[in-house]
Length: 141
Image (tube, rainbow, N blue to C red):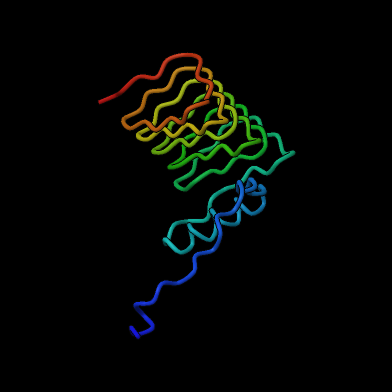
């Protein structure tokens, strides 16, 4: 009989579709990941919160609410229920919800349920099938 480490293990049966992660759990995951990586904690605009104005930060911004204005940060994550309208300058822009405006970033990630309406200059792009994109995406050097 082979040693135990060489015996086949029964795999868990494949689960049905994964349920979407609740907003609070997603935010907590972002915070814990940032802390483990030695980064500053992200600033969070929670669901139901609306902000109009300018945001400047060296860290990350996670949006589940609504922001209208100018954002200059290292990283922006627009959550599934988040809405950002205005101008964004960042290293990484990850759109899961709605973005309307003009953005300049190094990395642009657009999820399948995202809605992007505007002009974005980027260096690297990842776009999932199903995303709604109205406007122009331009590779910058």
